[in-house]
Length: 197
Image 1 (spheres, rainbow, N blue to C red):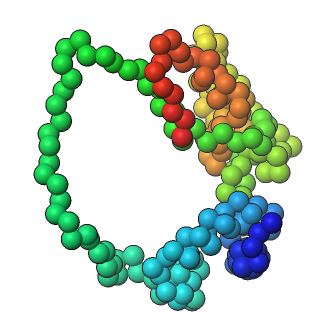
Image 2 (image 1 turned 45 degrees about the horizontal axis):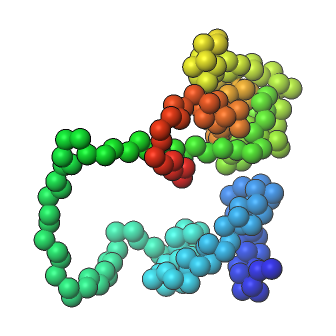
């Protein structure tokens, strides 16, 4: 259950998104549902005055915001500690193997054969259109993951119109199969830690 003020801001944001034609109504509604709590929390802690916040979000017809304007950053009175140069570990010191995966952009709604180009912020998913019905080419059948396994790599979908099996360039995030293939190819022995951000 949303607090009344958060819900009110969400309704206003969704209406503004639609009225300004920033995206299709379902996209506006989904984006607001995902981010309304975070946006309201950021606004509540913001140093921007209401006209500046409005100018930042909606442009000059609403208010004025200048990223190069004066910023007041209050620094603590405590002096900065002295810089201590790092000391390399001695030979034979214990080591660690760490796997760091970041920014993989998995799309749970990715669907092969859908349109790579669409009016929405994210394509290659249910609802972004069926490119095959419009004469698409169906690129990326093998892809980089297949090539890593020794399978046939397909041509890049950069010029294609359909979402490929392993992913596609454009406004598309990754399908689950690509993530699973990546994880299957990783050397997993003796890892000290795994970070996935």
